[in-house]
Image: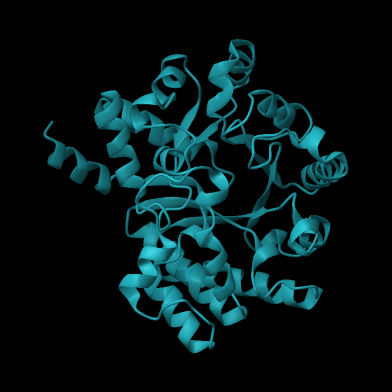
Length: 341
C-alpha cells in the first residue's frame, strides 16, 4: 500500500490514546487566547513565535529539558474557565484525529490555579469536568481523566500528592478513572532509593486508589533502569506501565511484563524528542513487539511534540515495516487496555 494511502486509512480508523497529557495537548492559539483573556504574561503574543516556544522540533538533551515548555503552559491554566477551555480544545483536537477513546492525564500541582488552597483545586477539577462533558456533547468519544501526582512537590512548593488525591476522590464518579505515579525520577534514579518518604506515600496512595476502584499507571522504565518497572508493578500495583521501554535491558523483567500481559504505553516521537532514544531506528518497539509484549501506541504530548496519533502509527509502520493487520492489532490493544468502561 502506498504511503499516502496508508496514512489516509490510518486517519479514518477509530483509535485509542491511553497516554496524552493535557498540558502538552493544548494548541498554541488556545494558550494565546487564554493568556489574553486572563492577562497572563507571556514572552511573546505573536502566535508563530509562541508556537516555536511551546513546541519541540529537535531532540532535547534530556527529559528535564523536554518538559520545560510545559511550565509556560501551566501558567496559563489560571482559573476554572481557562481549564475548561483547555480541556475542551485538547479533547477536540484528539477527536479530529478519530480518537474514539481518550485517557487524558493532568497534573494540577504546577498550574497557576493550584497554589496552596484546597478550594483552588476543586475549581481546577470543576473546569476539567466541565470541559470534558462539553467536549463529549460535541464529539463522539469516550474520555477518562487520569490524575498525575508529582514526587517533587516539596522542592517546587506545589500542592502535595495526598491533597490532590483527596480532591480527586470527590470526582471519581464524574470521569476520574485513575492516577499516575512514578517509580523513577527524571534523572533515571529509582524513587524508592532517592526519596523513600515519597515512595512510601505513593505506595499508600496506590493502595487507597485501588480500594476506591481507581486504576493505577506508573511512569517507569523510560530513562533509567528496568528495575523501576518491577517497582511499579510489585509496589505500586500498576495496571499499565507508561513507556517501559528499558525492560529490554533485562530479559527476566521483560518476560515478567509479557507473561503478566501488562500493557506498555509506547510514545515514539516523545521518546526521540526527550532524548530517551537516539533515533527512531534505535527504539526497542520492534523488539518488544516481536517478543509479544502488549503494546499500545500513544502521543504523550502531541502539541509539544508536533504529532498526532495517526502520525505515531504511520511512523511505526514506516520504520518497522508494520502491516495493516499489525496496525489494527495494536489499535485494538489500546481499546482493550483502556480504563474507560
